[in-house]
Image (cartoon, rainbow, N blue to C red):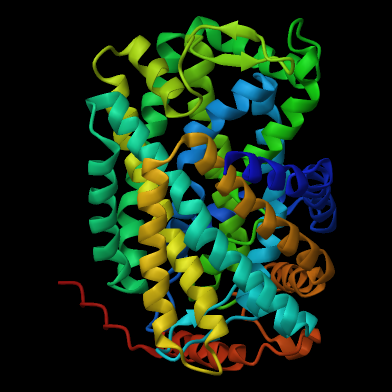
Length: 499
């Protein structure tokens, strides 16, 4: 099984996909005039404003839902793996994939908003399958992406998250993986049988809490090792370009593993983020594009960086030479994964590190599994739009629970290999699609900025921009204008005369 998965990953994760991810991010950054820099303040403002409706969740809930998918085991075990096989320089390339990927996230999330539609329960649904069909007119390509996403997020990727939780719990409290698997399946069943609203509410509460707590502990460890922080930064930069003695041999691997784990973690271009983005209630698609671009920064520049600095400032990492020897060997005999991060925190806070990382990983990875279910369900709904097949959603729930059980009990190598395969398949299909379909998202950005300069709260009218097959926006626009008129016409109380 491991050999087959490794062979398939060699085909999917070739150098072509690595450079496609970086190249697409650079291209979209230029086309959007580096909106991820210019629009930083707008990202934060939009994240904290906006409401929800019966059809859609709020911008913050959509951000939390997408972050619950982005912030997972890749932020803890994935960063350790990148450093193991790519050296400290892999962290730099993770940062680069996030910086460039923020513009990619804007494009795909805005497209998801433009071409979203309502399902049979009246809730917003959208994602790459929807915009591929409506904007490209290629139903077969849309179905291919939908099937690949159901396979990846419903069967391949959940096992990675479950494996990391089970491993971390075994390291911290010696809990058997079978017990962890049973607990995860029961908790997952309670949430996914509760519907999209329960998923959004769960993510809104858990994600900000877990990310903030994790980053604060990382900052505390950095303060304790503050003298080593400048040296670690220099090490990351030097080894990223092969300047650091001893790490020149893994220069190519630094780029490969940095981008590979960066895409796995922040999911820019992978096509998962647009599913949550489409569920938001906004007056203009670009609003959610800005918010989702910001989520890339939270995932990689904050949470992934927190893990990297905890590992590097404490010196608790292994780095593999391509020939198989170890360049740095501070943790002999420890498998790559959450154990490195647990050992890093444990070395500074004995008795606290392993349990804390295990709990953080439980929240990170479990919310990601829940988000994966939502993405897979959205694509099942896409396939079911014309012919209702209720059994498919029920079957999906059984499959994802089986995947969690399998991933928790199998080796980390097989679990990560299957996860990488799922990410790679989705990334190939989605990045090619958004390179072809970019124009509506760019027009939306230009329209949004034009209305903002005129002092307006932007409202989207696709017909004026020459965008077709976005009929739902006529209804959305009327609702937002009616709400605005209602607020403006609301009578105000007369001032009380002075005594």
